[in-house]
Amino acid sequence: MRISNPLLPSVSEGVQVDELALDTEALTITARTTAARAACPQCGRWSARVHSSYWRTLKDLPWQDRSVMWRVKVRRFRCSHCPGRIFAEPVPGLARARAQRSDRLAEAQTDIGMALGGEAGARLSRRLAMPVSGDTVLRLIRRCKSARCSSPRVVGIDDWAWR
Image (cartoon, rainbow, N blue to C red; front, side):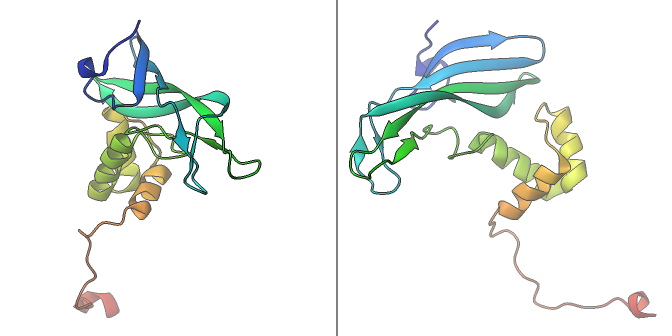
């Protein structure tokens, strides 16, 4: 079953949804990339020489209390300029290279972690159908380069702390 992108607003250009599978706990979206060529990350030149393909699994924001998982067929290209260089095409608008969760899910889990911390953020995330461990929440917080947290100007000690 092919689904055009206007029906699913979270599907970016360059990704074609082929199938939706819904069960009691999860929604699985099977998709593939549609770009005819990809740019080599080392030299920047475009290549259309497909070497192979593989399935990439990504977690995304929940839908109606169900976790959402993307299964995206991604192609590997061979660069015609760099000798022996094989690279995978990016998944546009969904996730960064080597990521296991979508950018939107990572941002939501980071925001929860910034507000609650590691274990408390993990418990809330599980309740919101975005399961994550406390250690991963802390890792997402450390990765965040937010301007919201500024360095303190003055550091003081309470009277009871040094007695």
